[in-house]
Structures are given as structure tokens and as C-alpha cells.
Amino acid sequence: MSTAVLAARHLVKHYGAVTALDGADFEVQQGEVLAVVGDNGAGKSTLIKALTGALTPDSGEIFLDGQRVRFHSPLDARRRGIETVYQTLAVAPALDISANMFLGREQRRPGFLGSVLRLLDKPAMRTQAAATLQQLGITTAKSVRQQVETLSGGQRQAVAVARAAAWGSKVVVLDEPTAALGVREAGQVLELIRRIRDHGVAVILISHNMPQVFEVADRIHIHRLGQRVALVRPTEVTMTDVVAIMTGAKEGNKGRADADLPE
Image (cartoon, rainbow, N blue to C red; front, side):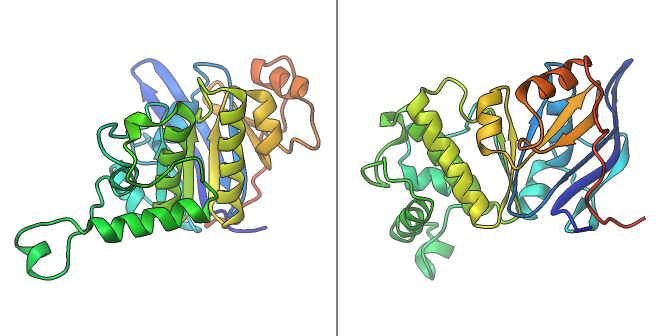
């Protein structure tokens, strides 16, 4: 048994008469890609929002590195090393790549210029942004001074993912990162996901694209009716098996916990 970097036990969330989470369990290990799959309405989004501070579950527990935590906002989760990239990306098209990499975390110049005049340290941010892109093998952009509005969809996605990887020391959550991308650009994003994993960061991939899930995931969390109904490895099941479990046509293994957590 190992300690999961991020885990949850028996999460419950009600919206009036609707039960979005019904005793949901979850865990992701350090340095793995965990795909989260399920039909629309299965409760995937609610689960991820609970894990990243976007909502507070009615009951249940969340653990980070084996310690109970309570996130009151996404900022709480970010401060603990959990970054999320939603489908909307939240990039600023009018700003350049380096400014987007430091969006909300802008660095000030040292001394009087930064503390009093509040001037940004653009050279330092550009240097760090370029180093991050190089480390992650992102070479499609001409320069970190290039405005994001001039980038393709895949390049914008890469910038958003790279920003999450730069600040997400524990977990990077990616919500449908290849949606609306062509085959080539989607392949580049999948390769970027592998690089993040290889740097020891856990990646949670929410996706409806089953071939891509089987290509990049180490394990697959199958969600149905507000709870985890199976936790499988793509080397041990077929896509048909996963779809059958998702739809209820086949029983899952209920997702046996692999993490050693406090009682």
C-alpha cells in the first residue's frame, strides 16, 4: 500500500434532490496519469471541483500526501500544489506567452521599483517561462514574447498546460485538453502530459476520448451515478469493457483503494 498524493473517501454532494456525489472514492499516485471517465451526468465534474476547492462536499474526506485537508477555494488548492486547466483555458489572448505563464503570479522588480512603483520584472518572467517551455519540450512557439492570440488552438492549450505544470508541484488536472484539436495537435498535448508525469507530477485527465485515454493513462477511474464503480488499468481491459462499465451493462470492481490513508 502506498500513500496517494491526492485522495478522497466517501464524498457526498447534494444539489437539492439531486445527488451528484454518492460516497465517491478517489486516489491518484505521484507520477501517474489517471484518466477519469464517465457518461454526462455521472458526477465527474462535481468530483473534480470537490478535489480542487471549487466546491465543498457535504461530507467525506480529502487527503493530500496522506494528510486530511479542507479546501475552501481553488486558491487553497493552488497554494498546496494543485493546478487545474479547464476547457475554457483562462488565457489572456492580448498578453504574450510569458505574461500568461505568470498570470496572477506576476513577479515584481527587486527593490524600490517593484515594492513602490510596482513595476513587473518582465526579463525574469521571460527567462523562467522559456526555461519551463524548454523543459517540457514545447518548441512550437517562436518566442515567449509572442502574443497568445497569434497561437493555434494546440499552442494555446500547450501554454495553459505548461503554466499548470510550472506551478502544480503535486497534481495537474486537465479537463478535456484535446477537445476541438486536430490529430497532430492532440498528439502534442498527449506527449506533454507524458512529460509532466515523467517529472513526477500526478496528472488527472478528464476525457471522453477513449483511444487517447488508453494511449496515455496508467489507470482509469470509471465514474457512474456519483461514485467510482471501477479502477482499472488499460493493459488489463478493453475499451468495450470500460464503456460497458460506464453505462452499467457490466459490473465494475468498485475501485479497490490502493492508498494507505488514516482511519
